[in-house]
Amino acid sequence: MNANVGADVDLYPSRHGADCGIQSRYDPIVYGEPDRDGGLTQNQLERYQQQGYLVLDNLFNNAEIERLIDEVTLWQQAFRNSENDNVSIDEHGDIRSFYGIHAQHALYSALSKDTRLVSIAQQVLADDVYLHQSRLTFKAPFVGQSSFWHSDFETWHVEDGLPRMRTLSLALVLTENQLTNAPIMVLPGSHKSFVSCPGETPENNYLHTMREQHAGLPRQDDIQILADINGVDAISAKKGSVILYDCNLMHGSSNNLSPLPRRNAVFVYNAVSNRPREPYSGMPARPEFMATRRLIQPIRAQHQQLHF
Ligand code: 6CS
Ligand code: FE
Image (cartoon, rainbow, N blue to C red; front, top):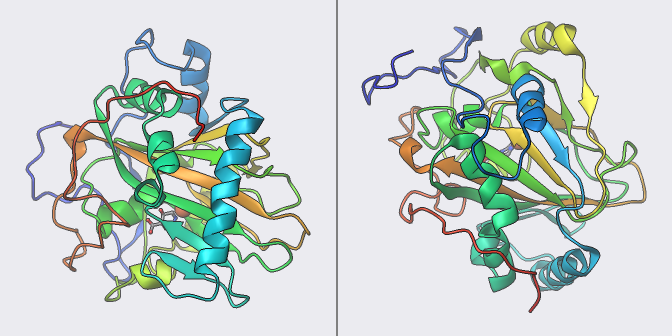
């Protein structure tokens, strides 16, 4: 596909009523040359290309994770039972999701610029990168709610105007993601095609998304087709590891019946050459804490031990 496709061409139309289904992906998965410097080996890049995700063990040490969790504990107390634009609270008053964490505290701002994350994004996307979105995801013990299958790119394209798939997520595991506490589940290989969704985009849809996504959900038949190809993987990952996944990988998670919380700090890096256009939904752009639009400048990666 010609990389210079006109600014107004919507390559990935979605949420146009009943006209939906599985279509081609026009964009590369790994943009970088195989030997391009960065945190991933050639084998890892190959696996990422095929599967759409990788688990990178022990990128952060226990002391760093404990420090990050201490901050989260303070946020839980500060935001308990309180409504904030960028924080969604569950029916028990606990945080369910917290967007814009890089702007919330210097520790998470430093984490978002840490070379252990940024160098991977720069390598895979073969470009300078900026932070499209950051968030804490909480799966509370016993009552953590499910999230149906979806492609994040479908939302970031339709609601944020990201034109191409040159974006990836790096989820830092703060509490162990086990098979029993509602781990991220993915359809390996599903990132290689784009699944357009039925329906349309409600006004202020982000208010729903922060709790539970209603728009931008693919048809079950299309999920079935993709699952029949490579099955379903549930991603278990130890505290301090990082789950790297492509923006278009179909993923979801079940309810958390276990007594263990599941918490990840997710950083979404987008290539600076893939800056957002007007949302393809035709709706107003989402708030800055959901999708960076104003402050788009290349991150200068910093190597540091996270301690404050
Ligand atoms: O709306 C969003 O940006 C978020 N929604 C979901 C369902 N997954 C992650 C994404 O960041
Ligand atoms: Fe998601």
